[in-house]
Image (cartoon, rainbow, N blue to C red; front, side, top):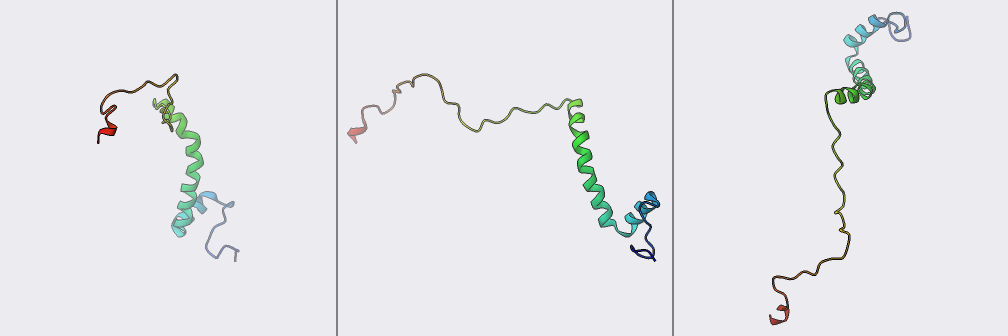
Length: 86
């Protein structure tokens, strides 16, 4: 009897047979490995594909309001010099 159980194939003896067995007998582990393996593959394949399709990285959103250069203008207008009349 093998260490992994009586009916389970060993991976290195027959990888395709083991993958079929794992998909049938241990689907949670199988799909976890498939989805986990897809991440690094997508890191390599998705950015070139996006550039090929014409996607451009947008400009960053400013985090602060730009401070104007030069002296400030003296504001005049509504309710000037009438603050003490109330």
